[in-house]
Length: 186
Image (cartoon, rainbow, N blue to C red; front, side):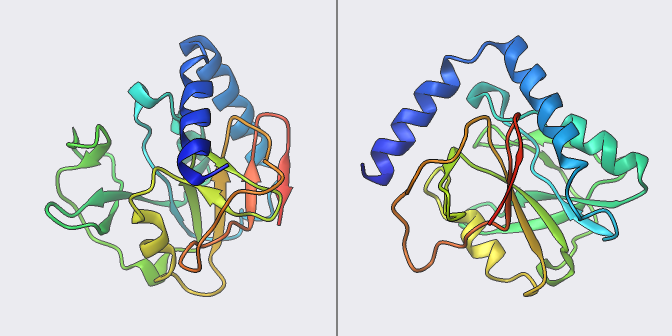
């Protein structure tokens, strides 16, 4: 299968998940995150979900991070660019839905990519080698390539890994993937 065929497959699989199941599976993913050896770090980058795409609801992970007094950073697409900036999420952060349907901070304190230690990554699918399949815009590959070498990349997926997904030289693999059933280490 090509990347586009995998994207079509996983978009269809997501559409078949009920809203209630999205919430239940998201809670299981957040609970499984507690098994990871990541809780001694300070700076955590996490995406805010696009409900219309039935992405994993990261609100449950956010509560865990807040409960552990972690610094939380969220992405914001730079208008007219194919890049992101990373904004500190605070109690007074105002969010607005972007043209991509993503809740994003209107403004705030920008944190450089080099400061990120743990990055939770949205994806459609991944394979057994940690190769991930996103939406195809390359936002996360560009961002991850700017992170420090010891940063941990963690995919969140409703689905178990494929045997193999096509990848390119510029694709950045995951260190871990969390599914509702388990944590996978690559």
